[in-house]
Length: 76
Image (cartoon, rainbow, N blue to C red; front, top):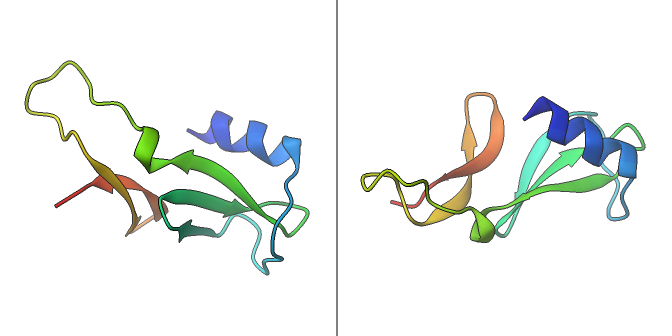
C-alpha cells in the first residue's frame, strides 16, 4: 500500500489544495491523500475494488475512515 501511495504522489495531482501532507480523505467513492505538492491525489476507487476468491469476503466496498486514515472498507 505504501508503494502505491508513493507512486501516486510522484505522479503529482491536480485538485483542491490541502494542508497536511499524507492526510487522507474520502471524495465520494475515491480515497485521496494529500501529496507533497499540497494537492489531493487519487489513491483508490472503492467502486473498483474486486472481491477475493474467498466466498466470505465482502463484495461491496465504500470509502471510510479507519484508525490510520481513510481507505476502502466493506459496505455494511
